[in-house]
Length: 495
Image (cartoon, rainbow, N blue to C red; front, side):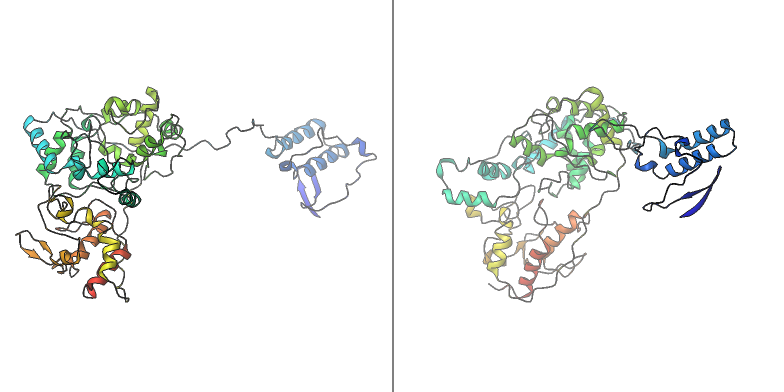
């Protein structure tokens, strides 16, 4: 037991967990003032001995009663003596959230209406680049199923293929099991009502992963600045006023995104802390939910991509601006839409993080055959754009007979002999696919492997000048797949 001092003199205090006999002070314990409630709160346990000792001192000392009462009042006002406020069961106990850090945005400049000549040129280019092979709403109708990349996959997955039983059921079943990519794409309907023309032109030349839950991305086509400007004018011809970013309550806007289930579909990369993903408060079919999730953009791009002047209206009633919108009407009030828009546009975001370029793996020491490379790579993915023309009524795909704005390159990966025949260069002359690159970051790498490595660099924001990464618009091949190709080539391309 140790001795301690207080303003009324010394008293004894026993450390927690130890016991002591209560001292008899005065002639009778009953002369000691009594504590009104003997059930002491745990947090007040340490102060009870002090109060008890002080009461003993008041009784036995000559301290004046007014002074003693004042001193006792000071002790009783200690936080340890106060009973905490009771909360209703289930009441929110979290601390009040800190203020949301915001950023200032430059007002969007006015957008003049596109000229008729530029719009006409853009429409021509949309046809040339065959945008309708993946996108609805291009203004060029639906292509035949044989040229409808997304539509063909959708028909197979929905058990609506083939027409009139032209393909055996077991073959269709095999296709259905193997389809992974290009199952849906955003429509181009009413693009200009929501999206800035300047952003479109930039995106066409330097596409990036806008929809993280969709495996395919916008391909890197051969589009110069003039063509990109014309296509953007065709898709977004209307005028738009100069507009400042939406003002609103960012904290409430964040709460709206959480309460309305926005993060069930969307990502919002760069936020210091993620918004909770909750259930969408409107009833949707399984198909509509899947479509919404797959097509939902990362909201970090909204401040560059979307028009400030129509964003609030878009959040309130999406189908009024785009009749085939994948985003449901969440019945937002005007205030909810305004505050949600303010949070989307003005919340602080950390710099974007791109994936790093994977390290190249060493060549395999085991034997690698053509059959293995064909099965694991060429037939699994590459055939979609580099097939045998005889298989598809003369269409060998964009990488062989041309398409998507590409001129024919004659790259046929349907057989060992076809691969050995090489490709057409810019002069129309044949060159080997196994010829090492003469310059650049992939100097010395055979072209057939270099294009696979270039795709890794593209998604990391480091495209290789003059070399288009493959597979076009799809996720990069794994390092193990590329290792397989490089090893096969290094071993002399055995059959």
